[in-house]
Image (cartoon, rainbow, N blue to C red; front, side, top):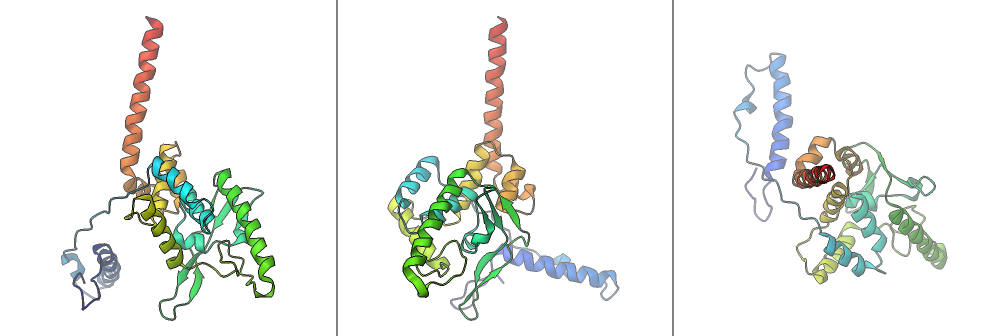
Length: 264
């Protein structure tokens, strides 16, 4: 499975591990009902999964990125991604009926996916198959309000040509945006910013790191990101929490020194 076939690359170690997990579970059930005497999947040697190092934008890069997207056609989309941690497919699949300006919340219950068979697009459930409601910063909700007003202008200008799809992020005729278009524009921006290797997913990573460093608890960050468990979030962002622990120790040291000084 690791081997490539022609110009088609082999499967990743993580994908192979997932396939093995499904087969092992099925064979284990067969063993339980006496269809087989041993589980042959027990003897498999799985390829080592190497965890990819996350590369979030630092504070300076975030500030410069915000400057560079000011006035860009996809400015609000990028801001929502950066400051909510939503996946690209989730932002592209966001509908206005999931935006509650009164409560200041977003309901994340779908993602926009591309059908590789026919090249079309369709809405599906989220990656975790579980809807979640997040409460973004007021800045994000205000950006969405401005974007809605802009979209209303597009609608009035387009007239009968407007496609009333209810998607939050569309072109000037109301059609949903395509992943590749959003990605290519992003790559041009980060190249101009001097970080051409930055991935679109790094916006999501950046949100998680900023949220944790700002004092959000891991459970809140986990739920906002749509991870299955807080343990998974800790595993991915463990280096951030370790830095938080060191900062906590430094604050405690400062407190202790202050108490000692006041008693001197």
